[in-house]
Image (cartoon, rainbow, N blue to C red; front, side, top):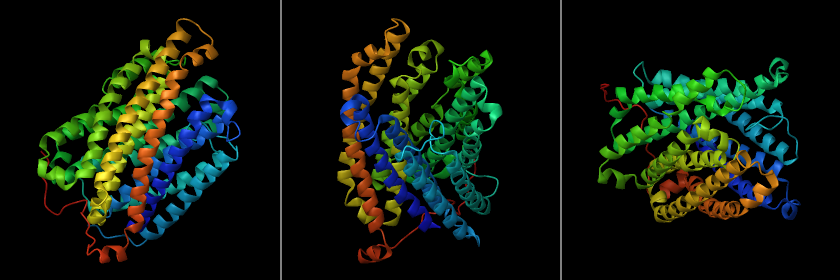
Length: 464
């Protein structure tokens, strides 16, 4: 089971590097399409960048999940075969998707702009991953599962639901009514992010409990309260995506009220974790902790932005502008990527701490550089988006004139994005190298024995 998990993690790093590369090229093509048009037009580069980024998050999340659930339960007879089939389907789907997009063969919708037939292997492979996951969870644990298991399970189920929903446009009844079609699409695309966030945030909480060496935080009633609050956001917070669609007013009212609670779940649990974590424990898991701390900062920044763009009076000026891009990039890089990097570092530490320790200083320096450049990147996007919204909505200036006005901000965004890509790309290459060096022969040469930290300790934990 771990062999498939490690293959997933290696694949995820390749996808992340590809996403960074296509993102940088797309940014400069967007700025000057005439000069760089011979490379590939922006409308083709952007879907490849988005697809690589989305599959980086999904692949790394599932890879880590498979590694963590390989705890003290017995592997079922067909788990290995199911995982190999699932990974093969997943890999073929990703390669086919990127190949089709690179050849200009489109046919889907936002996030999933590839030919719809390729959604079939994605769906089938996810169902196989889910079958193995739930089989292992149910056999390893009874009814009193920690909160991160609930979050992982919620994410697995809701991804299936929302991914299916995102493809309902193939049915004529949805496609032939533009209001219905857009409403369902924007709703699905908003909720599907919440689905994979449940898996990512569950991973963050799992890492916190392991670094702290105490699972009690995952059983507290406060943790479950905020889990259900997050679940409510997943199911209903999508409403602010459709403020501009003539849908029922009560949808906007409910989504606005729920939006005000966004991100509270992770902030509260991270604060609890940080307040209880001792200095000795931090030093013992220094890299995973630093990545988690970086994600906490971005949770706070995106909380402020999320609350603002959920207010209808503000949403009028920000919807569809670079402010939305800033929120998406701040979330996917500042939060999701930092948590997933923490997960990768933790797995490497479990398997071979000597290899990871030898690169800790360099990785920390690259993390700091990426963090500072990402802040500049994020602020430049927000500035460009606010200016664009203000000039178009209030001053009714033509699009071309407004784009000329924000050109300076977009150059700052592009060049800071290069620094982010170089720093995070270097960390990815280091992680990828360490995963390939992490073999039985290498561990034996270094005198390191493989050890597994079990997902479910045998000691009893009484929920508080």
